[in-house]
Image (cartoon, rainbow, N blue to C red; front, side, top):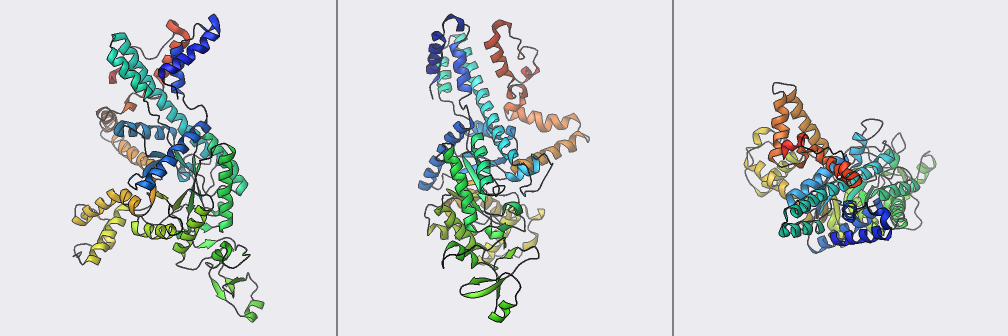
Length: 532
């Protein structure tokens, strides 16, 4: 990407080549607009962010402390504010992504209204959110660069050469808010052709990383609900292939695929795959199916599906709806086989959906996968569906019990009680929650930690607090004290909401286009000046 002076020079050459008819066009204004709109298409974004993720994965392989993180979002503004906040507090977006949650799209973006996470929402609503997120992230770029241009103009007006150089250096060193998005395509919304078509839309909107799960598409459930039904490996691998073809067709050759397995919590399958030779993938899948061994006479009168399993004739256990049960306590083995198979067939990262945040449980599965695929890495859902407080207090309780430490002052099933909040056990549990991501990155192969639904919950909590005060005795003070004053004290740019929405960028454009005739909104009577 050209630096500021190069962009001005390039624009000047084009303008000069068109003679006097273009003399009203300012090369510097053109340069500014070009820098404010670095990414012209979603494919530009997908190619750029895929490179970021690949580099981060290589860095993690060398040093597990270099794990990455993201937060789920359901609106472009939410994603924008996250990245603005990250840059404000940490100075860089390195290692921080966005997560696009299918759960939140279903619950908050569907034209049908709020829906459960069962792939009933419109396919295109996911693509629309990817595009919206990047629109807002690009607007954050334009807004921040606009402030840097204003600093340069002020330095020039004051004749301060040091400030001029500093402003130009800031412009040339500007870091974009555009970061990778891990995008949830659920179970693919149909057959492999449907998955391919939707994946293309994702990528064209800017997604460099697509997460797909091994559930049956038309029976898909949230990963933390019951009733999950998985597909045989060949069905899942066909969808991984479909996503890879979509990436390559569009020229995003280093796009990433996250293969998610729900097998740990799934006890059902929809069909029995055909095995062509002993020990093949289909045979391994069939060996997990629960059933009753039948004699030849019983088989002749079974009147149901029969299958061969390890040389025996089996009548599979089926539900009234025809779904077939897996053998109990086979979830871990199925997860390990899923992970190895996915990595051997084109997936880049794994996602193991678990029922609790337990490093030992995750590490047990990952270590088995790494015996075959040493570079296996996970994306892990730090889910709000877990009761983190209770889980970790119980983990500490169990660890102390095993160590022989006195736990007589605690009741394990009541550890969520507020009476335990300041106890030694709870302090230890909170320390373990605090270090969970770093510990799991080091001990369980987790490259990327995400929270799927954080802003669903923060929006509910903050709205509850505001409504309670505003409609109660506090009235307007509830907003002023609970929101606006905190925005000011914490230096949130959003307190100047006109600027955040792009009003000042529009004023600049009006001045570019109309010169002194421009009617601008940012004059002395703009009340946002009260927050200067």
